[in-house]
Structure formats: structure tokens, C-alpha cells
Length: 462
Ligand code: ARG
Image (cartoon, rainbow, N blue to C red; front, side, top):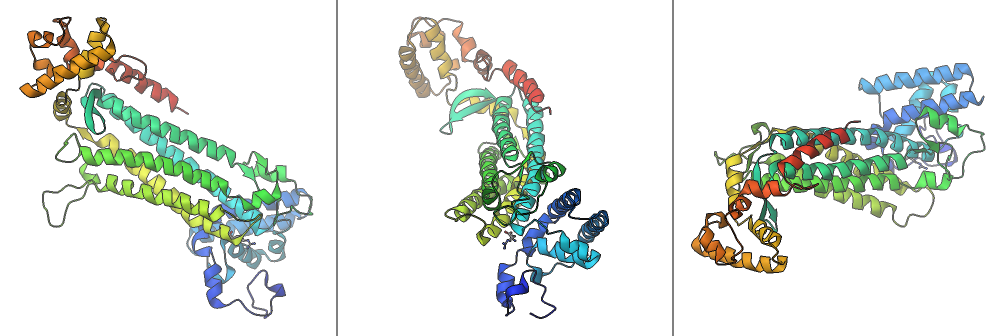
């Protein structure tokens, strides 16, 4: 091979790589995102090599200096990334050797790009999961504020998108809070499971150097070194697990998005989204479109797609490392960007929405939302619930015919359906009465909602 062959594995080849193949196989266009993690990993690996006597103090000093230099070059946008050097790992290593000479060439002792990349992704993902979790917490905080503000606000609760029973708007916001809390929990679990260090697995079988893997693991904040070298370099289940958790979270956001879109329509008119989160139409001057929720709803599909990509990528791969795995990065990175962006948008937008309280109240008055309360009332008077259900069904049919609400019927009219109905029924038929009656753990009574707002604040305190 010619002397200016930049390939680090060029030794056995007597033909240069086809130019197209070089570009086709290169990952530096996207894996440079791992640069910071790669430098961290290399720094710790070098410190460990010095610790076990493979590197001298001077060599370690040179490597640390070189890596720091590279970090600064990258941050300043001055680093000369080269496709010929294939990926982030070889770009950094080549530059290191350029900067510090022979010490740089020793850095790869007892290491392979296979355990290197497996470590880098874990380091990077661990940090990014932290950012996702923070974004979830900040959104949850905003939801608690909104729930507190709207504890007494009455809106119709729906099943089948038909008016079902009146609920507190705050209670509805706390439903979103709970979804997010489980999302946060899934990310916590995923981050804990992946926090093991592959370095020392080398290409797949471990290394003949007596590396102190515990030492490196500690330097990098991993709980333990991985226990099987073949598994450590080959599996990407941790990335799949993250994308699964992200897909579920995006699915939740898309449900919220759907409600925001519906509620801000002229037909519902329950809420107004802040102007700064909406856009207009180039032709229809009256329009205020809920673009951000719509986009988030759309992006949920894209993240689920990434999950499926990674599952298909991993499926049927024989052990250990295969180049297929280079394809793990783009779906993973895009999932992170999409999830963090969507969470941040919602964390800012949702708490700033304003509720048209009169309208949600009026909407709850339609659709016989307190019919269940009348049935419960009869059941408390010793009517079997199934019979009560039947009686109220008939009363509702009558009210519909008369074009009025149950609460607008006279006592005499109601008594035609069951003589046990008395004057006190009218308290039960009001929306406020209906809400207050559901004063049970997890129920929609304003008192419960306030209790859960405060409990929620405690729960998300770290
Ligand atoms: N760029 C590669 C990847 O992302 C790094 C590992 C390459 N290892 C190898 N044996 N070719 O997976």
C-alpha cells in the first residue's frame, strides 16, 4: 500500500477501497455526534492503561493534552473530519497521533472499535436520557400548575368522544401527568439497565492485556463492566429499549396533541393555545392553526418507525458485532431529537393555554352528563343499580323528548319514573354536585384534584 494510505487497517490490502464504497460505508457524517463520548472513553481508557503500566506518565499526559486539543477543535468547528477515515473513532485517533505522535498510536491497546462504539453509544445515550427525563419533569411541573389553576373548572369527560360525566379540567391534566410519570419511570429503568461498560471486550473475545476494567468503569460512571464480551459488543437492546420507551412517550404526547387540536377548534372552543405556538394561513386570514400539536402528533409515527427500524436491524444478526450495527445511530439520534423537542414544546405551550371556562361548563351541561349521578342516587335509596340504570334511561329519553336537561325537569316529572325521588335530587343533578360526589382517591372532586396536585409536586421532587 502507498504510504499515504489513511486506512488504519490497510496492512493486508493491495488495492485501495473503491471511492464509492468508502463513502457508502463511512459513518462519520452522523456518528461525529459521539465525539464527546468518544473522547471521554478514550481518556478513561488511557488513564487505565497508565494505571496498569502500559502507558508511561508522559504518554498519558500527551494523550490527555491531545484529546483536549481535539475537543476544542471540534467545539470551535475547526476539526477536519475526513470520510476517508470512516468514522468518528478513527478520525479522532488519527488526529491524536498527528498531534502527539507515538503515544497516540498506543491508545488502541487492548481495545477495538467494537467495544469502543458500544461504550460511546451508552455514554451518549445515558446523558441524553437525562435530558429527556428533565424535559418530562418540566412538562409535569407545568401540568401541575395548570391543574391547580383549573381545579374548579368543569368540563365534560368523554368516552367514545361522547359526553360521559363532568370532570374537573385539572383532573384531566393530571391524567396527562400520570402518563408522563410512567414514561419517566421507563427511562429510569432503561438508563439503569444499560449502565454497564463494554470496554475490555475488545473485538469480541476480551483482550490478552490485563486491563483493570473496574477502574475504567468507575472513571466513566458505569456501575460495572459488562460480563460477557460477545454480548457487550453486539447487542443494541439498550437502544431498542430506549426507542420503545420514547415511542410510548410520543404516543402519549400524540394523544394530548389530538385533544389540544380538537379543543382549540371552533366546534369545541374549550381552549386557546398561545399565539406564539400557532401559525396562520397564507390564504385564509381568519385561521389560527395548532401546528405544534399537529406536528407532535405526526412525529409520534416517526419515532415508532425508528423503534421498528432498530428491531429489524437487530433481528437475526448472528453474534457478535456486524457492520449492520452502524445503522443504529441515525434512528437513535433522531428519536432523541424528536422526543426532547416535542417535550420541550409541550412543556412551554400547554401550561400557557387558556381555558374558556364558560364554554367547557356549558358543554358539560349538554349530553346528560349527570345521568349516572341520578342512578347512583337511586341506588343509595336501595334501588338495585341495574334497575336504577333502567329508570334513569327512561328519564333521559323523556328529557331528550322535552329538549331539556335532567336538572330542568320538575320533581313531579322525575317522580313519574321512580317515586323514591325527592327534592334533594337536584343537588345531585348539578355539575358541581356530580364532581364533589366523586371524592375518592383518584376521583375528580376538586378536593381530590388539589390533593393530587400537592402529592404530584412531592413525587417529582428529586
Ligand atoms: N462505525 C462503526 C459502527 O458504528 C464502528 C465499529 C466498527 N467496527 C468494525 N469492526 N468495523 O458500528
